[in-house]
Length: 205
Image (cartoon, one colour):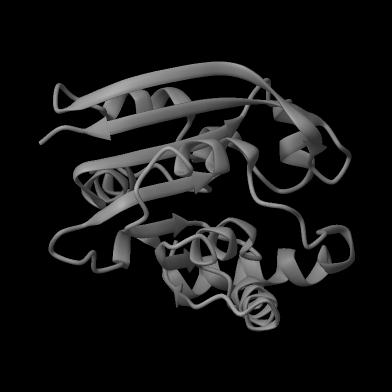
């Protein structure tokens, strides 16, 4: 799938769901993880309408936020402007993004729609974005109903899963996995997502 095709697909979703996607609060687990770290550079992968990126930017982090949907980024940028947050918004696939030479101190990805590929491009790009000594936080919905997901146009088999990310982490990572963490507020258009699977990994070299 080309970058433009993927972007158009997500633009259509964000446009059609505009009234159903609230300007919500940042992820509780991201706040929990970030508050234990010294603010530095942060990279929010698949930032959507920007709640996590805006929180990071207003709490001392130099923040870059990436999404394939310009529709989502426009809404995120408008929210950031109203809150005084300074975020670098980037419309791109993760696989096409040029990571700074030193990477980022914190890389977050919440419910990322990262496609499988024969060369494992998305996994490699995600891990390569983390600086030595940096932290990776990846959050997935737990207990996904495959048929319901397909009814919204997603086949979970097409995308990286929690297990794919855990499996890509080698000896240079200190990994903590928390399965089925309950959410304070259910997510999803029907409130169907009540638990998350969480990966927190520190890159030690």
